[in-house]
Length: 220
Ligand code: HEC
Ligand code: HEC
Image: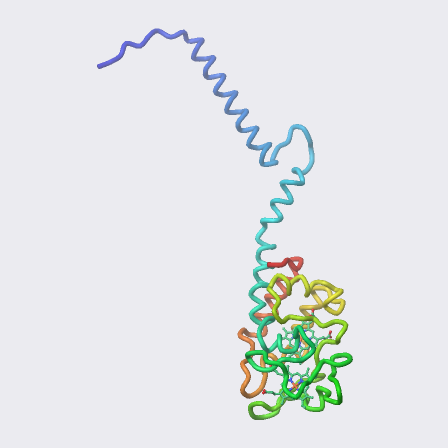
């Protein structure tokens, strides 16, 4: 069955078509203005709010913070934490127990009451379990710059590692230099008999830390 169409005034159609076209153009303009692609009121770059939102969500920042979080598998491992304790005694073993024989940090981190670190800790590991591990200049960080890793969340550790007041006046790039070259850090990969090494290849750890530093040291 066909409905009889009422006769329409052709000018009505034209008016409708023109209105539709105007609406479409307006919508398109609104879209471009909103996206900051075209701004009839202001020439120049898109508004700062749009830029900062884009930067905050950019994959670079995410990648840097994610890299740091992964690097914490090393940084927060007992091999590193044991020399970066909260208190004034070094820690020992995978369960990070206080160092036997009441060894303490002492002045400059070198030991106290005649129990100086390098009396027992030589430049190299000794053979057999439970003998003193060794690497050049074995010591704790000094008492006025304790560099505590123990019990830190990845975010807290990140904030500390990029703070020159707490990291020995290092830039993030210099923190990377340290974890690449320092003998006490490298020891974590060769800790001697009976100790678990840190759980990731050294090159991979350095790469994660570089990604973090190169992207402006963002925290997870
Ligand atoms: C009297 C000897 C002696 C002195 C002094 C000494 N240590 Fe030790 N240290 C040892 C021995 C022995 C071990 C091995 C303990 C074990 O594996 O059960 C050890 C283990 C450690 C470990 C454990 C490593 C790990 O991850 O398991 C750290 C860290 C450490 N010492 C730091 C220090 C620091 C820092 C000083 C100086 C402030 C120091 N020690 C002074 C004898 C000593
Ligand atoms: C025998 C003790 C010892 C061990 C083991 C050790 N460190 Fe350290 N660490 C130190 C001392 C001492 C300093 C301060 C040295 C300086 O400022 O030059 C330091 C400084 C640092 C710093 C730079 C300063 C900062 O911001 O904290 C980083 C990063 C660091 N250590 C990472 C590690 C990592 C990662 C490991 C494990 C793979 C590790 N350390 C194992 C003693 C140790």
